[in-house]
Length: 342
Image (cartoon, rainbow, N blue to C red; front, side, top):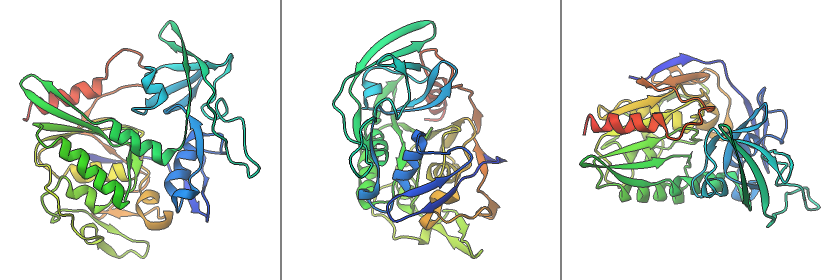
C-alpha cells in the first residue's frame, strides 16, 4: 500500500480578482513557467488565465540549458520529437528560456502577444546535437494541460491482452471537463486494464472523478476543513450517473504529481485491483483541495495530516529526468504489473 512520507515543501497562494499571485521559495517571479501554470489553475475565470507562447514542455535549469522533464502530447515539442531528458540549449542562436525565448512582445496592458514566428532550437540528446524548427502555440496552460490529457489516450496490445493508457495532466472540476473524462474512459472500457499516468499531474479533485472508477461512494476519504470539522468527501457533490471502470489499474506517480492527482492516487490505493509504481509525489495538497486556495498546513485526510507530505508507491521505479535512454522504465513496469493481474 502507498505510504505517506514527510516532505518539507509548501507554497502560499492568494487568489486575486484577475490572477493567482504566488509566493514561494521555489518561485520568485513570473519568469518561471510553473508560475503561469499555477496562475492558470487558480484563476477565478477563464478570462483571467494568462495566455503565452510555449512549446508544451516542463523543464528545469541545467548547466548547459534547460532539461526537459515532461512533454505535453499534441504540442509542438511532442510533434517534433523533443523527449524527456533532452536539453534545449539555444533558440535562434541565443540561450533558451521557456518563456523569454517565445514571449518578447506585449500589448499596452502588458499581456503577451501571439507570434507566428518559426524558431530554430538546438537540442542536445546524449552526445548528439539536433536542430529543430517549430512555431509555439499561444494558449493559457490550463487549456494546454487539459488538451494534452485528451491527446494522451492510447489503446494497445500486450501479449494477448489489451491495455489502455491515459495521462491525467490536469484534473478540473468543471462540468465540461468531468464529461470529457467520462468520454475518455468510455473509449477504454473494452480494455483488460488501464494505466493511469499521474506523473507531473496537478489540479483539483472532485467526487465525480472517483465515480469513474469506484462502483459506489462508501469508501471515499474524509477530510478536515479549516475549522477542524471532519467531512465526508463523497457528500460534497451529487453522485454521477456513470458506469465505473471495474478492471485492473496501474497508477504511475512521481515528484511532479501534486494536488488533486495526489489525492486521486491516495484514493485509488483503496481498491484491491490497483497497483502503484514510480516515485514519491510532491506533497502539495491543500492549496488544490480547499476552496479558494485556503492554506491549512494541518489538513487531514482520513485522520492523517496530509499537506507537506508525499505519497510513496508500492513499487519504487527510479527514472531520473537526466536519463536519455529511449524508453520509459516506469511505463514498462506498469505494463508488466498489469499483465500480472489481468
